[in-house]
Length: 124
Image 1 (tube, rainbow, N blue to C red):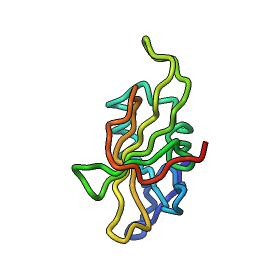
Image 2 (cartoon, rainbow, N blue to C red):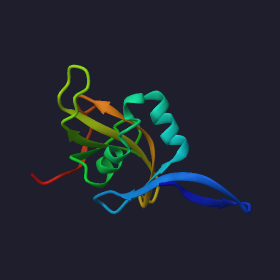
Image 3 (cartoon, rainbow, N blue to C red):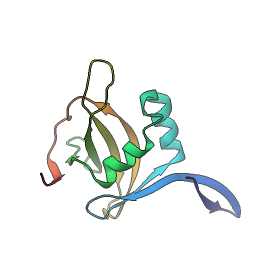
Image 4 (cartoon, helix red, strand yellow):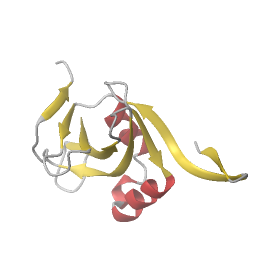
């Protein structure tokens, strides 16, 4: 679903979806990020729901050790892709300075976490 936004009286389409993470952080997936994801990672074209799930109910969230304003959201899913039977949907989110909102930068499939301090993990 597309949400219109108004800029100087014109209607433009700027965001695809908005979802809250387990901490209540509002994360926005904008149209330009969706284009980046689907053009750079074509395997993600039919995985919008998986991206939103990874943010809303992730398996765990890592801090990015290189970029303190970014978080990595992982959701382990039984996805058959190539020789893999289980992969993580990984979504990288830039978080604002007040940590009340964020924007999706990219998303793709990974076979293992990148490694970084765990900020949150789902209860088993």
